[in-house]
Image 1 (cartoon, rainbow, N blue to C red):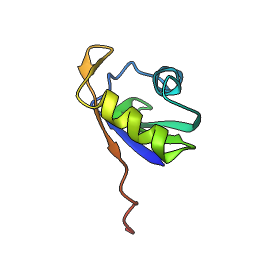
Image 2 (tube, rainbow, N blue to C red):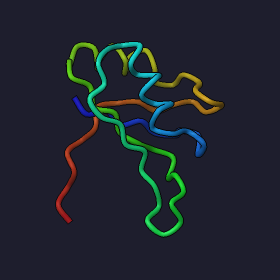
Image 3 (cartoon, helix red, strand yellow):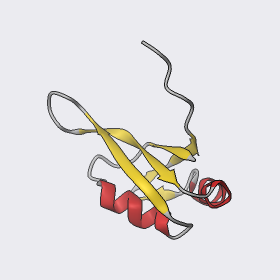
Image 4 (cartoon, rainbow, N blue to C red):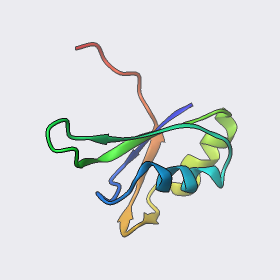
Length: 83
C-alpha cells in the first residue's frame, strides 16, 4: 500500500520516515518530495508498505500525531492523476 504523509517538517529525511514506519511493518520504499529547482523538501512524502494490514495500522496510529514538531497527516495515497 502506498501511504501519503503530509505536513512533515522540512528537516525530515527519508531515513526518518523509514524509521517511523518500520515500527509498524516492512517498508518497501520511502520518498520525500523535493522542489526541482531548490532541492528543498515540499513538506510531504510517500511511504510504501508491503502489507496492507500493517499499513492501515500505521495510518491509524500516526495520523494527527506529532513527529519532529509537526502534526502529521497520514492516509492512503490516491493514484496519480494524468497530466
